[in-house]
Image 1 (cartoon, helix red, strand yellow):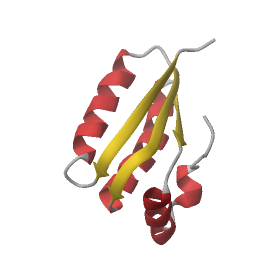
Image 2 (image 1 turned 90 degrees about the vertical axis):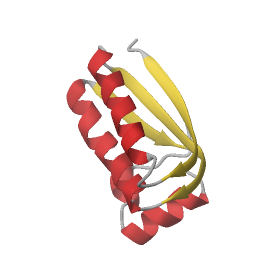
Image 3 (image 1 turned 30 degrees about the horizontal axis):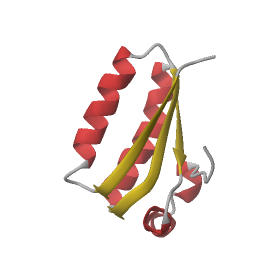
Length: 97
């Protein structure tokens, strides 16, 4: 069974915090032998377009490094922002783990 890492994200996901998330996950992917990364978004209290596009970039680029990405437990904040931006289908938001 491939390794599985679950991360709980909390607080604001915006232009100020998105670069750090991208950097941390790039390091993780570089050190990984593949597997599944589950990002639990239930703790996100604010999300702007930078945050949404960071999530989209993570979903699109980490699989190239052999790391599948699942975005789960997206609350109303993420869903509303994704809906306004037309990114709901592209993010493949899930309610389950």
